[in-house]
Structures are given as structure tokens and as C-alpha cells.
Length: 374
Image (tube, rainbow, N blue to C red; front, side):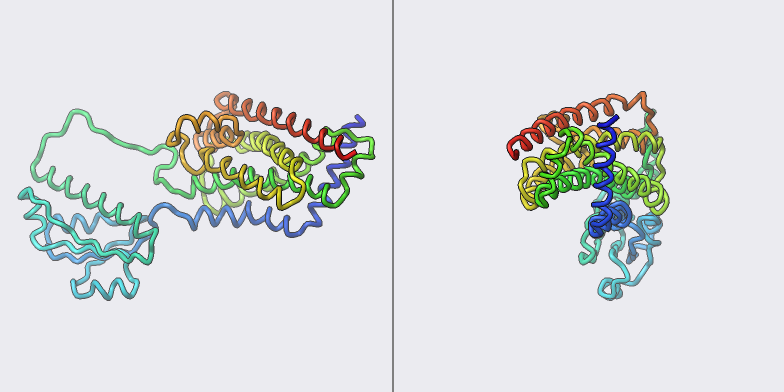
């Protein structure tokens, strides 16, 4: 009981320290609210109501079909303009894309020729221009292929391939990016907050005060972990309900409490990494440099930015020792596919085991550091 009281009282000191650090409080509030919203809306990987115009010099059934193929939410309804208005359309910024369908386009297509459609693009909208060019190419190719097949009345094959996206039908990037940004922020802040709390004790000289008290190294470390875990847990809950589900309208299929339980395990594992880095760091700049070397692989190679299947097998095997790899997997399974505990318990077990290993390493190193300071 005495150990629990010591951990509780030391933890309340961390609450006071965090409350008086207004800049850090602002950072925590921003990354779980405005930061998530900005990532979910401003970094879209698809078109969104892109303005497009068409010069129809063919005036055929095929050209009309191509014009009508551009619709929302990716494109605005295509406007037909004369050829002389192309330069003014792009210069004024009224359209990002202007298509020029040449004369006799339908006749040449039916004759087996390969006529070209000129696509004029306002490249000042760089991301939209790059993505839109691919969209336009695919749309035109599909419409031409369907028109030729209908005109020739080719018999249908007995088997047809139909692709359906189950968990994100419109492939909306905000549905993926917002949740993955929460995971990245959990990893970042857990290492940052716990590690800096330990480094700050050493820089301010208060670590020596703790050493003369009847406290064990385990009590000191656990007192650094549990207060910050409650702050992160509260912030993640607000972010999921208020920003992801509320402001961004992302449908979360699974149990949010189950995900929050996984968040606690993830925080414990990554906080132990932060303690490990804070123990071997002598000052805040050194801790910041070490943190950069650790946080980048944890975020970039865990599957939150790019699929793990696209990485070399050696990298995939190495990253199994990182808690973020398992956390990303269970988060996607719970929040996107509605998986329950019976399906994701191996991931929970892996995160807990990694956390225990890192806690043991951090505790041994912290005890060694205290012994050298005495």
C-alpha cells in the first residue's frame, strides 16, 4: 500500500508540472484537435470538385459520353467552351483541366485508329494536376472502351471481375489519415512527455531530491507514466469523438473502448522507450536528437504511412519488435473493420510484452544511473 501511495503522490506532482507548462498544454490540445483536422482535410490524396472544361470539336455521341463522365465529388460538371477560350480559361483560374476533343474523334476510334485528346492542365495546382491527370486518363480510357464494346456488340464473358472496396468505398484519404495521425501523435507525445519529464528532473536538480527520499526506482518511473497516460487517454477520446467522428465524419466501425485499452498498452510501451532515451540523455538537446532517430522509424515503418507489405521482408521482420507496428494493425482492425478482442488479442499481447521488455531495460539503466549519481 505504501508503494501505491508513493506512486500516486509523485504522479500528482507531474500533473502540477504539466499544468504550469502552458506551451506543452497548447501543443497537446492542438495535435489532438486542430492537427488531426488539418491532416484529414488539407492533405487529401484525391480530387475534390476540381473544375474542368471541354472543347468539343467532334460533337459526337462518344464525345458527349466523355463529357458526362466527369461528375462529383471528384470533378465539377464539365463545361463546354469554344477553342478560343482555352487560354483565358486557364489564365483566369476558372478551370484546372481543359480537354480538347479533336474533330472526327468517334469516327477514328471506330475505325481502329488511336486519336489523341489534348489535356491542358494548370500545373500551378501541383498536387491536383498530378492526380487529376491520372483520373482523366482512366475515365477517358474506360468510356472509349465501353463505347467500342457496345458498338461492336461483343459477347460478354461468363465471368466478370467486379471490384468493391468494403471498408472505405470512396477511398477517402481523410478516413485513413486522421486515425493514423492519432496513432503517430500517441507515439510522439508518449516518448516526448515522459522522456522530457525525466530529463527535466536531472536539469533542474530535483532528481537528487528524489534519490534521498525512501523511494524505489520502480516507483519513480511508474509515477512518470501514469499521469501522462491519463492525459493522452483523455485527449485521444476527445479526438476520436469530437474530431474524427464529429468534425470529419469518419465512421468508426469497432469498439472505441477496446481501442482505448490498446492505446494504454501502446502508451506504456512507448513511454518506456521515452524513459530509456531520457535516462541515457544528459540534457534536452541530446534527448531531442535521440528522439528523432527513434520516432522516424517507428512512424514511417509501422504501416501508418505506407503498407508494410510494400517494404522489404527484412524491414518487416525487424519492425515486429516495435510496438507501433502492432498498434497500427490492431487500430485498423478495430476502428475500420470492427474486429473484437478475440481477433486482435495477439496484437495486445505483443504490445504488452514489448512494453515489459522496454520497462525492464529502462528500469535497469535508471537504477544504474542513480547508483552512479550517488
